Image (cartoon, rainbow, N blue to C red):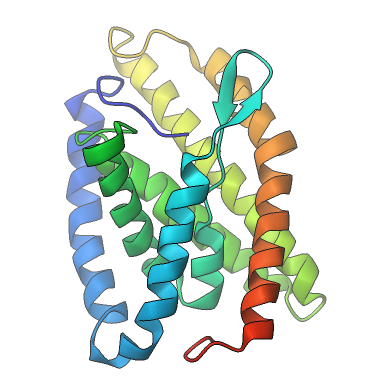
Length: 210
């Protein structure tokens, strides 16, 4: 789901950086100040867990792979902006040490996987949790993955429309290639992972867990 370096032109990467940097700074001030000290051990552990699940490649038909996100859990327990900061750190480490994604596209990847996905899942959960908390949690995780995948596909499609030299694959090919594995494979597994992890955390009754 990561967009690699070289796939997007400065027409897209520069605005993405311009939007993500001040938003990250504001989110960090809001959610990682002194008042959040008690929550930091759990948040740090969940961020590390998100890093791990994102490194596990799930093979899908077509000779490619997909991966989980793990960010919906952070959004549901704390806030989508907290998930945004945590996922941005995960993406930075992956970029610097594991060659996943890239520096120029870091803003795009952070907005897609760290903000739009978790935010959409959080909104779904808030809307449906009174009807069924477990159902709302599973649907939130599934929706978050779809929104992140759709955002990445949309950016790649936009790049093709702006300059096919950077990304020669048309949107009509990119969209199903991104969304079919996300809908059928990644989404259900992400939902199961989020339900399981949230249930274990609540059973443990960890300090500072919402």
